Image (cartoon, rainbow, N blue to C red; front, side, top):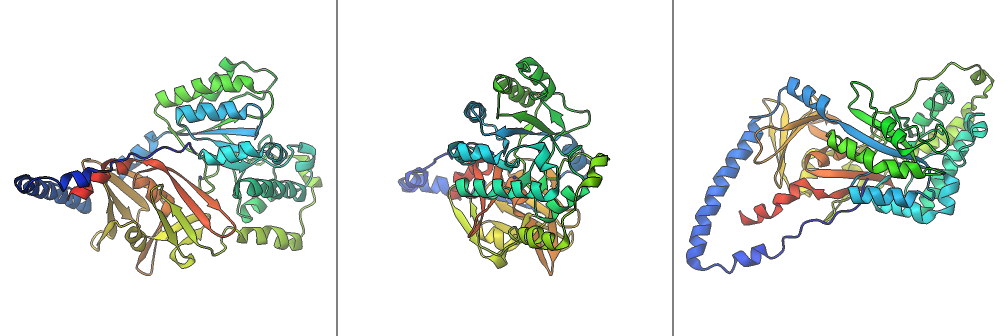
Length: 434
């Protein structure tokens, strides 16, 4: 669903300098602008007509080679969390922190720092006590809600991400999975275990070896580490772990509730048979009502760093915790451009130096910069309803050049914060010249 804040590049004064040019220089600049305009038009037409767009086969191949790593830390905040945050800040790397409610109560300053530096906060229950949490679902639920309220009171957000202490395998039955999903939560396990909690004082070298042991054919690595408790060796190992994934060409991302969940299979355990399933009246009162908080109609604020967009409840939709916006009206708010090709059934937008082609039929976004010959195609949530294309705003913003974003539910509004730097902002001043 991140990241220390980055200063946007400042380019003030260029327009004022141009206005002081002499008349003769103005003539030269006019023909230069005209030449640039013809070149730009040719590039835009290339984007609109689809020249250079990758084929479906190329798109699949690109997806295979697009490697992503999600660093995650459990059981915090703790005494080692500040050091972890310092390393992530210096490396400009985002992470996801699954925090315990009892620790958050004692260290609210660290919760605020995690949120303010752009990382994502997940819910790891209140006290991590297996005997309580896995006795029955209602007890697990109570701890999730208690921790959620603590985080909300500290940072003003309600985490939809949940990680089960010890993982779901051997702990969750289908009731846990089904009811949490019905309540609007996304349960995330992992597929790379650093092994830093298998025993006391696991050496940093061993942690690095396990944390970089990505299963074959896996291009999306979710790495389990710990910042709570006695994990000084994890802090020592973290720079080498980050260095490895950078050298191997991975992108660092934070988890989002809309991501495809990574979950362990339900283990057939006899003890599940003794669990009492919640009554239907309890589910209606707690689970069903909880789901409504994710779909309650309230304004949406989109913070772009240098500007803020505001959408009314009727100007966006939420489907399966994915935020969808109407493409044309949203691009108008961004002061971008859009065209529609009836022959291919695709739309093309361009904003600053980015061209994005939206294909509702294949559910893909293809983006490229003006000077690029080839684009990058990704799968996205796209719907076509009554002549209007609705697209996932998170997917769209990333294709328009955003590095990362966070999505938060606050009492009075939804807030989507797009973190700088924007790759498409690098050429922002170019448009002020033509």
